[in-house]
Image (tube, rainbow, N blue to C red; front, top):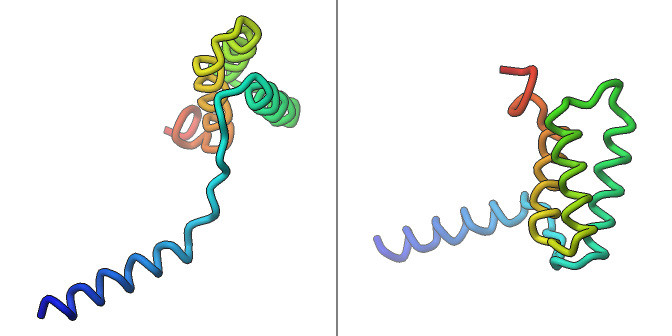
Length: 94
């Protein structure tokens, strides 16, 4: 019984891994912060009117990165990105 349970769990783990996209390894660097800022800005330009919260987070993220507070900047930029990538969870779709 324990062997068959182990095999099932192992097969489920392999199946889950097959569907997971590869992760991008990032570091908390000024270069990554700038790259993320550029990506957020490009995505915002593609929207007719970005939500105020996205604009605020993007501006704060850029400012923090410029001031050397890289982690705080990256967190805000990622949040802005996620709000644009999944608007149904963040604004307008509730």
